[in-house]
Length: 182
Image 1: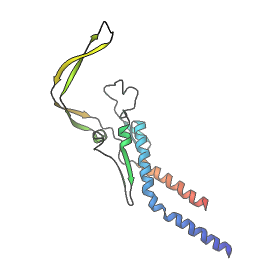
Image 2 (image 1 turned 135 degrees about the vertical axis):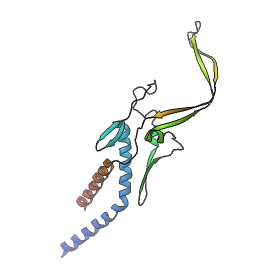
Image 3 (image 1 turned 90 degrees about the vertical axis):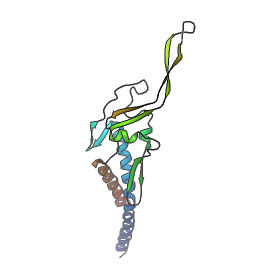
Image 4 (image 1 turned 90 degrees about the horizontal axis):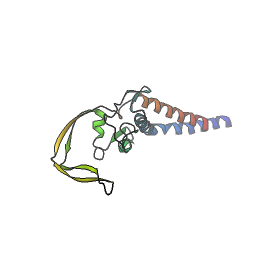
């Protein structure tokens, strides 16, 4: 009789743990979306079914600041601005476009318009003989203008079946923990 009571108590404890899973599923999905975002930036392409195809196009011009760095990774602001939020019945993943207005242009690609403000262009003069330094001297005023450029699509956010695979692994691991611990 005591074995049956112990078994019933174990089943009630397991059932209570399983009832909490429905609340944790959005948290697992949000975590999987964060993992996929980081994997996309590391692979320099949108990962679908385990591979990053197509890979992001390389920069046309490498600067001293961007040389040797991954595409879309200058200061890390874009990657760090992607946030996921788990609510009771859904998960939202996105970027605050107020802080990172160029995120949509990079993720979707296409033609974009840049408004360049007026500025003074400075010219460099040859090395000063006495001080042996390069000297910045006057320049000329440049009027503001509009530049239209084509931005290649470098998708880092979106639905991928790999997110579901990651969530399945995480949930299965939690189920195995519950079944083993009690």
